[in-house]
Image (cartoon, rainbow, N blue to C red; front, side):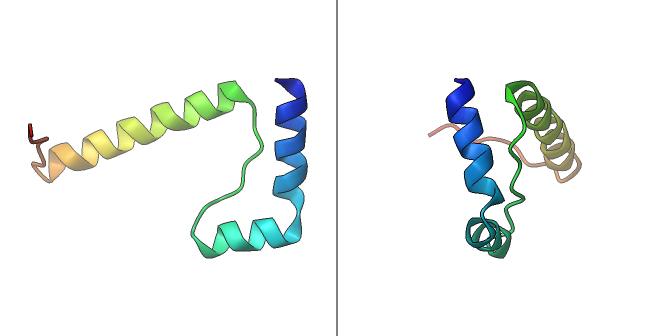
Length: 61
């Protein structure tokens, strides 16, 4: 797992990769699994609040 994380961090430091990601409005981050989990939890909380404020409800198919 450590090697995979190291290789990902190396790739995300590449200027071409960074510029392509930034062009797609993606912020490159080579953090660890814990920081990723924290980011996901924060995003879920944010978008749940947005959906609730806009009265958006999930539909069953």
